[in-house]
Length: 280
Image 1 (cartoon, helix red, strand yellow):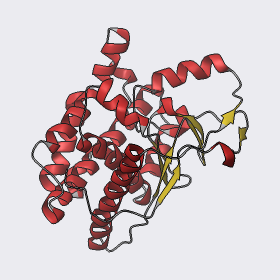
Image 2 (cartoon, one colour; image 1 turned 90 degrees about the vertical axis):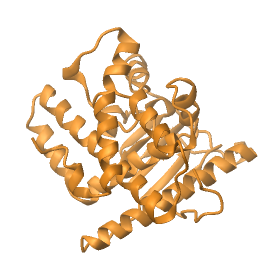
Image 3 (tube, rainbow, N blue to C red; image 1 turned 180 degrees about the vertical axis):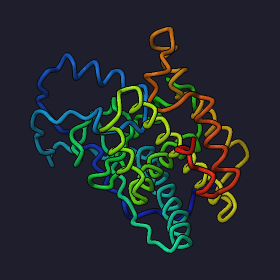
Image 4 (cartoon, rainbow, N blue to C red; image 1 turned 45 degrees about the horizontal axis):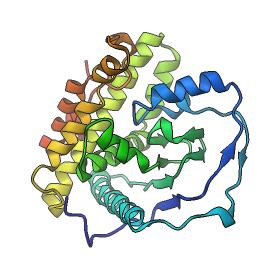
């Protein structure tokens, strides 16, 4: 991925190396939840974030300087975020609307958001209440080593997927899905979550389309990295790895094949009309 010496977004909150402590009630259940959701990224914060306990403010004296590698990874994230800003600003302008840029928060270990408290095990997530994406960059190491999805564009796909949820919020899609879930059974609500997540994958593909054609950001093999990441985190594959069998009614993100398909649709067209995952 050709990201060096490109514009970096200023919409970054770097909270890394700022340790936080928290007492969490009901540790047993909370631990189980965190272990399960650690298999995913992009999960609805309303499901995975625990709002109990009190955060202690970060200690200024305990901050540790970032390593050169950590600084470079932060710069990479800022470049990807900037490119998503350019893409979605242009698309929204074409639709006669204005793109409101989200903030991306880098954290280590744990973080407090408007959606609640989260630990690194929850994976990257988007909080619609404050319009911020939260990422502990240690997830990228897990993406490579645990999920077998290495490469900088696999990482960019993760970011673009979360930005896709921000686009859904701005477009009013997330609100409609949330309202529909309140009137649905658990099975129906899960199916709606799958459609919402697949659309975010498709939106990530739209970003890749424009990043490639407008700014020549992509290199040979980048799309394969994204597709490998999409394949690695499909519900069917993760459930088979974790429990030895698959329960389709419990899917919340879609199968590996679905995630690959919808990313490819977005990348093939660069068009919002290609990403209507809610159409029967």
